Image 1: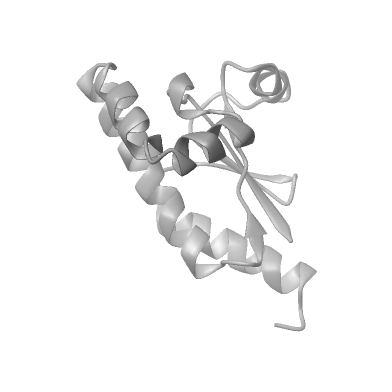
Image 2: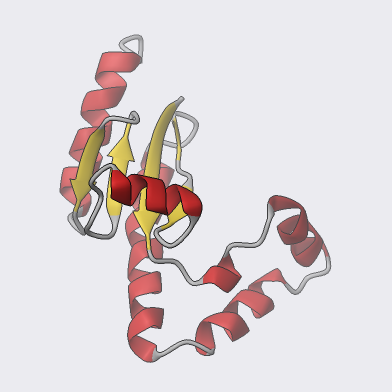
Length: 124
């Protein structure tokens, strides 16, 4: 599977560990917890988070089963590593661990993913 890592400023409370997220979802409160946490942030941060979520949703659906999309908080240790490696604008999409796109342009992101999939998975 092709990895499309996203380095962005994230709302930290949205980044529960996988085990906690399963627990919250099974308890039926996952969406409510995220909504309440999101509303605690300034409106401009909320809008940027929603914009990023929408931007990621379309390629995730289009290439379902062919890509994995990890999200890295720009302020995490891994985010710091990417900053040392030259990532300075957010969001930055790192496709195949190599190609970097610092953009909000969904078409550019989709085209890049498609190119990489054609290179790495020519059977499809």
